[in-house]
Image: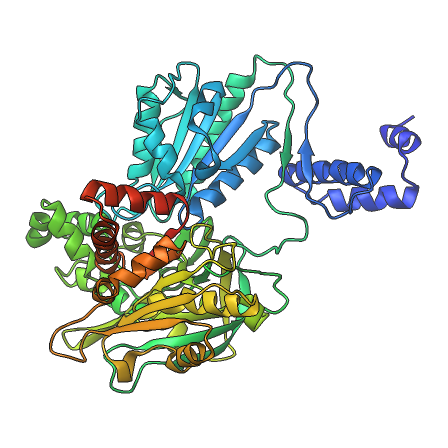
Length: 605
C-alpha cells in the first residue's frame, strides 16, 4: 500500500477534504506550515472546550515530563519597535520548537531573573540616553544592591537607537553591562541597531536562536506552548504590511501670515480593520520628492538609470532613492562617510569634534552635504552612503469613537531656506504638499501604551502641548466626550501668535463653552514684547496646578523634547518644591513617583 493510501485510511477527512488540504499546504513555507499546524491544534482544543473558533491560535510542541527550558524575552519600548522585534523573535523561536515568553519591562520583576536560564533584552533608548518610561524601574533595579547574582543566567541584548544622538543605544548598553556585572553569561554579543534596524536585527536573531538551540540540545524534549501575539481577528496590516489608505483631507490650519505651515490631515481606514486608542501614533511610509532625487543625482554625476540591488531585486538608482532610502536628514555616520569619499578637509576637521558633527548633521540635508565638495560617485557608492527609509510616526489627533473609520493627524511641514533654494522635510511635505486628496498613502497603527488616558473617567487631566503637540489632546478630549467622562480637563497650549497659530481654535472654544474642558491657558510667544511659553503659564498657575495634582490629576506633555519638555519638567519640579514644601531631592522623587504611577506621561520628539 502506498503512503498516500495509508494516510487516507487513518485520516478522519474524506477524499475531497484531504485533496483540498494537500492543495492548500503545497504553497506554504516551513514556517507557515508550522504555524498552521499549531493553529488547527488550538482550534480543535477550543472547539472541544466550547470556545469560539477564532480564538487566539497556539503553536504547541511535544509535551515533556521534566520542566522545560524557556526563553524569556523582555522588551523596553517607547514607540513600539522593540515590542515588534520581541514578537518577531518569539515567532521565530516557536518555529524552531523553542518555548518563548514575551513580557514588557514594566511588567517584569527584576528578582525573577535569578529563576531564569535564558533571557533576551530588546531595548530602545529614549531621549538623551534614557531608558523608556516602562523600563525605568527594571533599569534602576539592576544597578541597585537588591539585584541578585546571576551566575546561572545566559542572556543576550538587542539594542535599538538612533546614531544621530550622542548616547546611541545607551539603554541596551546599560542592560548588557548590568547583567555582565551580576555574573550572567552572554549567549551572543550585543548588537546596536540604528533606525534602519530590520536587516541587522534579523541576522542577529537567527544567530541567537541557533546558539540557544545548541544550549537546549541536551534536553531531549521541550514543551512549547506559545500564544500568537495577536488574535485571529486582528487587522492584517502592520509596519511590514501597511494599509494603502485614501487621503481624504489636507487642510492648512495656520493663518495666511503665519511663519508655520501646519496641516490637518484626514485619512480613510475603511475596510482595514485597523483600530487605535487616544495616545497611539500613525506610521506613514512616504516617498521622497522626485525633484530632490534629481538634484542629488546631478550633484554626484549620475543619470538615475543606473541599476542597483535593493533586497535582492534590481531597480534604478532613481527609484531606489525615491522609495527606499532616507535622502533628507543627514546623520553623523553619513557625514563621516562622505568626508572620506570626498576628501573634504572641512568635513574631515568637522568629524573630529563630535558635538559640532551632531549639530551639523542635525541641521543639514543630504543634498547640501554633497555641496561641500563636488564628488563623482557610482550608484553603489551613493547607495552605500544612505540609511534605509523608515516610516514617520505622527501622534493621532482623533478618537475613533468620534470619527469611526478615519484617522486624523496634525502635521507641521518642515521647511526652511537654504540659499536660493527651499528645503522640505520628507514625510511632512509628502503628506501636506505632494499628495492630492484621493491619493493613496501606506499607513499602520503604532500603539503607545506609555501615553494613555486614565482608566478612571473621574480623574482630572492636565494636558501640556504647544504647537503640533496639541494633536493627541484633541483625541483625548474627543474620547472623554464620547465616554461621558466626568473628570476635569485643563489645556496648556502655546505657539507664536494667537491670530495665526491657535490650532483648532474653534473646537477648543466650543469645548470650553460646553464645560468639557474646564480651563485653557494660552502662551503666544510673539504677541508681546516678552516671550511667554507654556512653562511660564504653569508657574503662573502654580497653586492651582498643585491643587489638581493633589486631587489625583494626570499630567501629559507632548511636543519638542529638546527644550519644551525639559522646561516643563523643571517648572513642575519648581511647583512641587514651592507649593508642596519640599526640597529639590524630594521634589524629584515626588515627580518620579508620579511617573511610576503613570500620572506623568510624555510623548516628546
